[in-house]
Length: 229
Ligand SMILES: *[C@@H]1O[C@H](CO)[C@@H](O)[C@H](O)[C@H]1NC(C)=O
Ligand SMILES: *[C@@H]1O[C@H](CO)[C@@H](O)[C@H](O)[C@H]1NC(C)=O
Image (tube, rainbow, N blue to C red; front, top):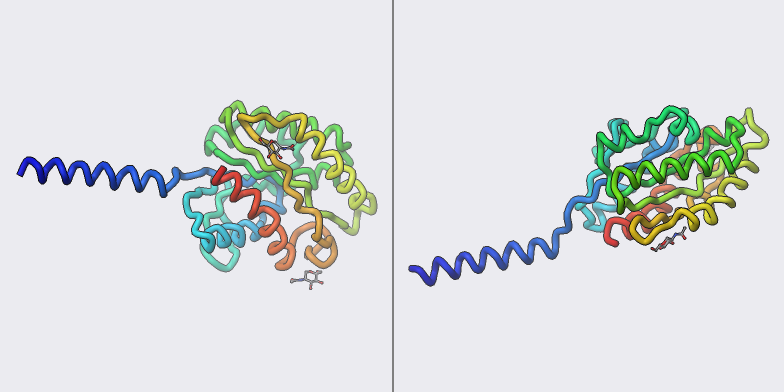
């Protein structure tokens, strides 16, 4: 009897150890941005579906905003605030509160579109990005940060916006390298290359079906590496 009891205990411990080795802990992911991310931001639904197809299920998307309808149920909490500027989020000190409510391990940020639209300079936008990164690290010292080179735009009311996006995107890698740390890696995600502001958006700004597919593809590899790294 005694031997059986010990054997069962041992088997239980071995089972627990092997489960621990195969099932990683849940990784909390915050999509941070504006309407391109949040309203409805169906590229996130496609991205979530790609994770399920790849059997990467140890994720929880977090944010104070709920999923919007994208045709199927998905894990869609997010911090994609329509109309928001990176410089505005910093001026209003909004991110710290969102972080305190949601505790992300990974932040995937696609911001700057509304800053560009409102003619904020790349320097001002990157200074705001820097403050946002500081707040993320204050929330979690080893947070992993993915920063998008944002999708192109060509809204009818802004002839200069296309070039402004190019200028911002061009400045992001050097800024990111300067802000990078071993503890809290910051990775640049190229959402721009291959994305057509006319064919892949419904209005020169917001992704349509083809744009959503491209955004999901752009984020997938970097996000998987952040989840598994
Ligand atoms: C930051 O460092 C990580 C390795 O820790 C690297 O993978 C990543 O590309 C670096 N990011 C930048 C912007 O240089
Ligand atoms: C995306 O929108 C553009 C312009 O509105 C249109 O030409 C294109 O056919 C759309 N593509 C898809 C897949 O919805």
